[in-house]
Length: 299
Length: 231
Ligand SMILES: Nc1ncnc2c1ncn2[C@@H]1O[C@H](COP(=O)(O)OP(=O)(O)O)[C@@H](O)[C@H]1O
Ligand SMILES: [Mg+2]
Image (cartoon, rainbow over all chains, first blue to last red; front, side, top):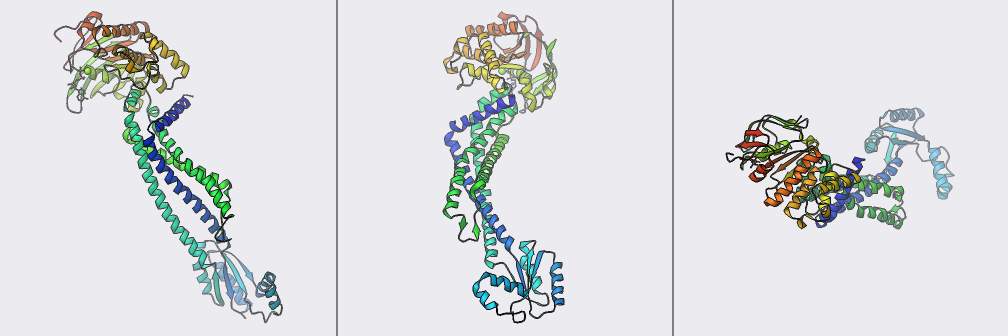
């Protein structure tokens, strides 16, 4: 009960203080707002990238073509070797007849041409379709299989996908760097804001100490003030997430550039990201105010 | 019973000045004590050590069962809640009115609203300012401001009231009003009052216990003492 009263008082004081020194608070709030907008964009982008690369990676398969006219023993040997590679998750063997039937089903033209082929005249090759455990090592695994006797060609994924994933990864790294730098600047600004509040309330603080306020009571309003700054700073970014992402999603009908890149559905995604952004805002505010209190409020 | 006991207390400030030399004394519960001495004799230092604004360099200070000399910074508030403090310069908050200034003590220790209200009005009645609850400090005379400060100091019903030259800024007439309030608090609430002063007239008129300091040393401690010229 006592704690709640104290917290209530702290929150009331914090809001009062933010609005009393509004011009000062405004600097911190704008900085938090800008930071959180960039944080929000980064989170939205990286979750989406994460999502569709995972989708693409799920479908990434190594296709192994076996040389024509090879004996069944040789195929057994290749099977064993593939099974022996540690990065191989699973594999399916598809004989040339199966491949032919699948292709016939896909198109009428193929169907017409291939209907003529019998087992011997079928120019297609027997194949293995291999899935790997670690997608980053897919090229090593493919090269290893290529070196096997009786294997003619190995193909995996599309080079474009690979390049896209690396491109997004480097963009992500840059975004992280920018976010961290912005957070540091924000924390610094909050420290300054809280420092000035502490100085402007020196007299009050000394009287509080005199009449028996505990350290907790003295410190909490300042820390809460930092959190309130963070909270206010997250209003604009959250609106941007809630309405901006929804509009973006609807405008592009859920896909970006091509059917390949599918966007994450807005619900509940935007709410989760909003909560994350609010949480980050409050946390950054708290870190700033806590360090200001530690530095400038000797109790 | 002793409320305060000092043993071999010495205070040397960081700049090397020794303000108190080997002080031994005790003060009984419920007494009214003047701490007298010339300027620089160590009165303020003595009072400051009692509410743990300053730590003694060595020796022990017991206030109401708390070993103040060993009290950790984090626990100082526990001591402060058991005593009230009044200064020469009132130290009110200019943006709060009389009621709010007194209620401030109750609020920062987390008291309930109705308890706060009851105690604040009682304290203001005791100092005779019940009719000025809505005034701000700059709308009050010096004597009235000091009475607000006293109300703030006693609102939580402390056992001990420390006053450092509370009449220092007031003319003799207002000073006597303040002394009447302090005597009243001492009598009706049983609060122990310790008041540092160099006002001869007040000391000689009231004939209370005196502790005489000179250059940081205890000269004498006596009942119904007076401010003799020797000091
Ligand atoms: N914070 C301080 N730092 C250094 N010296 C101090 C401090 N406070 C008081 N003194 C010195 O201690 C001595 C006693 O001062 P004080 O206790 O204020 O005396 P009084 O209140 O009787 O005038 C003086 O010599 C004064 O200069
Ligand atoms: Mg003094």
